[in-house]
Structure formats: C-alpha cells, structure tokens
Image (cartoon, rainbow over all chains, first blue to last red; front, side, top):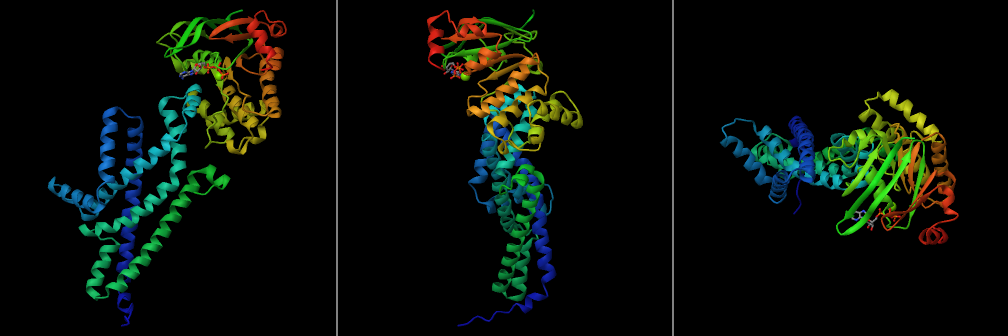
Length: 227
Length: 242
Ligand SMILES: Nc1ncnc2c1ncn2[C@@H]1O[C@H](COP(=O)(O)OP(=O)(O)OP(=O)(O)O)[C@@H](O)[C@H]1O
Ligand SMILES: [Mg+2]
C-alpha cells in the first residue's frame, strides 16, 4: 500500500502556520527572558540564601523537575482560573513555561555559581569590593558565561516544549496544526510541515542565542572558545 | 619611625591545631619584611591575620591605624590601605588585564572609567606590561599574570603590600621578572611583608627577616642574619637550601 502525499491542500493555510510559528517564538522569547531572571534569582537564593529560602527554592525546583510539564500547564491554567483572575490561554501558557524553565535555569546557574572558586571571592574581598559588587562582578558574570551553552540547550528545549501549551489552546504552532489537520484531514502532511517549521525555529533560536552570547561574552569572542 | 604593622603576642588556632603561638613583630614605614620558615610554620596564617582574612584568638594587630583584632573593625576601610597578592594570582578570568585592574578603583573608589583606565595603564607600565592591557589572564604567562595581580593591588594605592609566596608557582626565569617588580616597589618606598622561599631575594631586599618556626617568631634580624644564624633551627633551615 502506498500513501499518496498531498501537501497542496495545506498551501492555503500558510498564513496560519506562520502566525502559529510567530506566536511560538513570542511565547518562547518571553518565557526565556522571564525564566532566566526567575532562575538566576532562585540560584542565588538556593546557594547563598538563608535556610528557609534554600528550602523554599529547593522544594520548588524539585517539584517542577519531577512532574510532567503538561500537568504543570494544567495546574497553572486552572489554578489561575480558580483564583478568579481572567487571563488568556497565552498568558497562562507563558506563566507555566516560566515556572517550568525557571526551575531548570536555577539548577544550571547554581552549578555555575558553585564553580567559582573561593579564592576569587577572597581576592575581590581583599580589593575592597562590597558583597553585592563581588557577587555581580566576580560570581554571577563568569558563572553565567560558563553555563551559557547549557542554558542555550535549555531554552531551545523550552521552545519545543511550548508545543504542549496547545493543550490549553494557546494559539501557538502545534495548536494551529491541530486545527488545520482536522480541517483538511491531511494529518500526516500537516505534522510533517509543522516538524519542519519547528526545526527551522530551533535553528533560529540557536543562532539568536549564539549571537547574543558573542555580544555579551567578550572573552569567548576574543579567544574563539566555542559557545 | 612609626610602625605600619605591629603584631603583639598573636595567637591563632584552627581547632586544636595551634598555628600562631604568641607572634610579635613590627614593620616600619618603607620597610620590607621577609617572613621565612618551614612549610606549616604559620607564615600564610600570619599574613592572612594581618589582612583580617582570619580572626585571631588573642593578642593585638595594628595595621595603618586599624585595630585589626577589634571585632568592630571596618574591614573595607582596612582593605583600602592593604594590598595582598597570592601565590595563585587569582585574576578574574573573564576580565582583561586592564579590566581586572579597573574593577576595584571604579567599584570602591568611584573613579570614572577613564580615570581608572589611565590608572590601569600607569600600573601596567610599572610592572612592564603596558602592551598586555587587552589580554585575558589565560593569554598570559604565569609571571605576567602575577605581575598583573601586583598591578591590580597597586592601583588601589595601598600603604602596605602583602605577598604570599608569589613566585612559588613560577619557573626560575618568570620568578626573576616578578622579583624585579617587587624590588622596584621596595626601592620606591613601599612598605611590604613578603612570605618567600627565595633566600637570596630576602637577603638582598629585606630590611628585616622574620624566621618563623612552630608558630613562633624564632629569630628576627637584618638580611645578614641568614649568613650567621643564632639558632640551630634557622641554621638548619638555611642549610637545607630551602
Ligand atoms: N583554614 C584553615 N583551616 C584549618 N587549618 C589550617 C587553615 N589554614 C592553615 N591551617 C593549618 O595551619 C598550619 C599553618 O599553615 P600556614 O598556611 O600558615 O603555613 P605556611 O607557613 O604558610 O606553610 P607553607 O610554606 O606550606 O605555605 C598548617 O598546619 C595548616 O594545616
Ligand atoms: Mg603558606
């Protein structure tokens, strides 16, 4: 039995595919930035905070890393609704993705923070820098430089995982695909197209993060170290 | 002559390990004190106590008018007067030589970027590395990294410089270039305390040699004391070729 591919019936839908891809990128970009901030703050709290902060952040991280993203998305979505706050599916999706990627970012950044040698802190202390100055100049910046490749992978993964938010009908790429395939009955073709679009998006995200890294981490640019 | 550094009967233990057992010595303005002694005799600990990196259990330490032993010590104001250089350089790897040097003047002394850059070039010239300003630590040899570390301390215009075996990780040629920088500093009138295994250098540059043994100042005197030690222990130490 041979399957007759028919991509032609999808042609009419390209604006919607594009729209979905664009929303996927937007969701991912916002979640990446917010997730990075949340994750970094959590990492600082978990490595240097008072015990109760360590406990709180630790619990958050372990809960998120040991439950499925889909369940987290539902909990956030219905949780927000239960609080009586009306938000769009897209907003709920972003919140869920931030909560999720924040936990992973926390662990990646924490590994970076802990890789900064104690002697570096001592040297900065001896130069008279204050605690916050030491933290910013001598700990956080080199730590993030060091774990940047791991962060990049995590944020590409986030973009791909945002597909799950189609389950709460956030209008991103996978949700668009679901709709198109039920309109056209061309499921196989639709998901092939969507797969290719995701591949292209991954490529775009990687390039963007790579360029960002080059701009920010001067040393890596100068020394030609791989990012 | 007013003492820049004065240790009186300093005691310090790590747990049950008594590391400093009544250490006293003083260093006057413009003096260079070389602290020598076997491994584990407490030299680094003494230096770290002077800079309040360790708290002491007893005795007093006065440094440039700061009572270091006092619990109410303002550590950051002590830091403004004292520079320290470590065996392992401890340069910040993500910053260039120039940026390593500019960091403290901009953060601590609120100097503008331009002022700090001028200052960085000035101190880099003093250690003979003006042309390496844009290099990252990993692009420099050990000797060059150590000279940048010295320059970084100098940029804060300290009244006292502490050196803890700053050449121990270097091969003889690189050792020479670092020692030369230190010798120039000494000639320029900088008050310095250096822990060193370079006996020839101590003999030549130090105005005072402090021999530590088992947590005590065993013997102290001018550089010439190394040629005719009073104690058997120092004779042994010098004779062992360390
Ligand atoms: N932070 C610390 N905690 C516990 N013990 C320590 C600490 N620092 C030093 N010691 C101990 O104190 C003793 C003296 O150490 P110190 O580093 O002052 O010796 P040193 O004279 O500088 O030796 P070296 O020539 O090997 O550098 C050693 O027995 C060492 O194990
Ligand atoms: Mg030592």
